[in-house]
Length: 469
Ligand code: ADP
Image 1: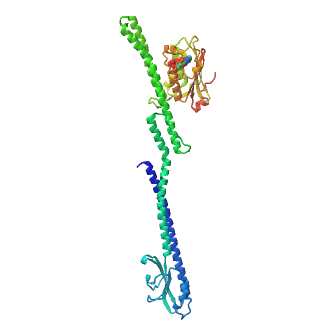
Image 2 (image 1 turned 90 degrees about the vertical axis):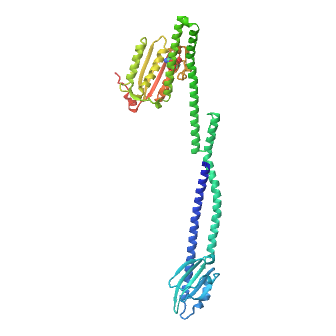
Image 3 (image 1 turned 180 degrees about the vertical axis):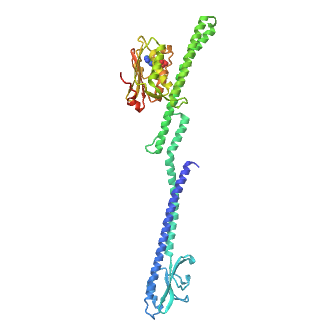
């Protein structure tokens, strides 16, 4: 059974149960009330009859009371005076056949209900002791009125019960429709997505309920799925395109060697060397691509292990290494942070970002071989700046250089072994530590890369600042 019918049935059964239990309660209350009312009437009548008989003059005959008792009697009621031998002395009846109830003498009062021939009779007997007479008074009430009232109520309940069954089924169906409509809409959208692709979305209604929220969530999920799908596609396209160039070069050299290079040692050596350069580039590109994919979800990869690193020490080590390899450069360093300035990052990630930035500063330098490196704590953040006086980046390309494979000057970048992945990796690594990477530059004059890392509270409060001499 599908949810639609389950919901319909459950809603219908619950509504019906509610209706039936309420009706049953009402029926019982009415029945009890009417029953008690009848008993009260019969008791009052008995009280009046007995009071009247007890007021009789001594010596009067009981049978003389007939006229008065006739006036006292009500519709569908019998009053009878019985002697000690169970014989009826006086009987007044209104539409209650005498033979329905046999006269009976009682010594203590009794109240009972019997049903001869389908009618319900209420009988009340009470002993009567007056001067010269011992017997009892009997009042019999035919509860026909009461019966017909109860029958009417029962019929009414059956009819309204049937109407309630139909209404609760319709109501249940309506409820299930209301609840399941948005879900069905999502199912339809999913089917369309399977047939037409990721562009399809669920139609959002004006209502503001949980189901709208579900549809919104679904659409948002599809948005991010579509976006990451596109990004992946783009990534594969870009990567294949970039891999194609070195592979074509290697292919060209191998073809050349095959045709005539074997006999010409000069051509052979040159082609082998150039092919080796390209394979090195390929190896570097593949490993950079690997780093890039890991940097995209750095916190999720298995080897992610952030630690407390002493920033100043790490920066100084890197600068020293760079200075050793690039002795012609002047590295002007100003680290306005204390030795205890701690950053909670994976050390290799931090090193990687600084190396990428310094490497670019050197790669894209020109005549002025000067690099300025500074570090300070500003507004709760560790700010590291690397400024070079090289070729710079055109203003309209500044926002593009952090894209994968983007290079301002393709030929120059290629000459230095650049694949256009360095800044993309650095940006993603910074993102994963909720840091920021900013670049500003004046084309042909200088380039400044700014890294901002959020610090923990105690450090941000000034703990990272070095004492001025
Ligand atoms: P690449 O490996 O090509 O250097 P990057 O992602 O590190 O890749 O940089 C992207 C591009 O941004 C470079 O190709 C270069 O054109 C430009 N660029 C980056 N850093 C600098 C810099 N310091 N000075 C001038 N141009 C730069």
